[in-house]
Structure formats: structure tokens, C-alpha cells
Amino acid sequence: MGTFLWILYLILVLYWLLLLARLVIEVVQSLARHWRPNGAVVILLEVVYTLTDPPLKALRRVLKPIALGAVRLDLSLLVVLLVVTIGMRITGAFASREAPAVAAALALM
Image (tube, rainbow, N blue to C red):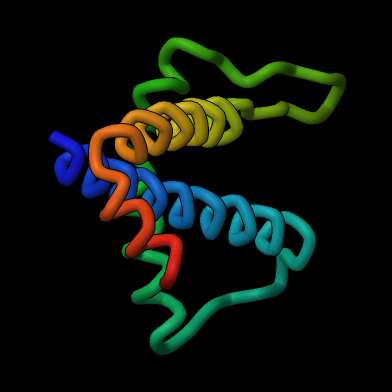
């Protein structure tokens, strides 16, 4: 069970990194509107958007963007980041109790 929890934890960490990359991409796109990616960057962006879009679209149906004057604030990415972070904390805590040898090996990396 401990190994399964560590694998789940690592998947959550990788997904958290993808969400963080999406956050950075969206900030760059909003601040530098003239920026148009090309080459390998387009492929990387497509992977990030393809893997992060499903939960964000599902959450946007429930949690509508907040209108603040002329600006609409979309909180779905932040909510998903928070949920994944909480999931990482919970699975990491249980996994370190279940398989301390795996926890020690990962700590050395």
C-alpha cells in the first residue's frame, strides 16, 4: 500500500508542476500579448494545456469567473492547485508512514 501511495504522490507532484507551468504560461500570455510561441514550445504548451484542461473546464462549469469591473477573475486554476496540494500533503503523510524505506530513498534524490 505504501508503494501505491508514493506512486500516487509522485503523480500528484508531476500534475502540480504542470498546473504551475500553466499558471506561468497564462501570466506570460496576459502580460506579453504579442508573444507567439513556435517550434518545440508549441508542443510543450499543447501537452500542458491538454493535461490540465479537463479538470479546469469541469470546475469552470461550477465556479464561474468573478466579474470585477471590466476584469473577470478565473479562480479555477487556483482551486485545482489547492486541491492537488492538499492531496499531495495527505498522500505524502500516509505514504511516509506506510513505507519509510521508500520515503528515505526519495529524500536522497
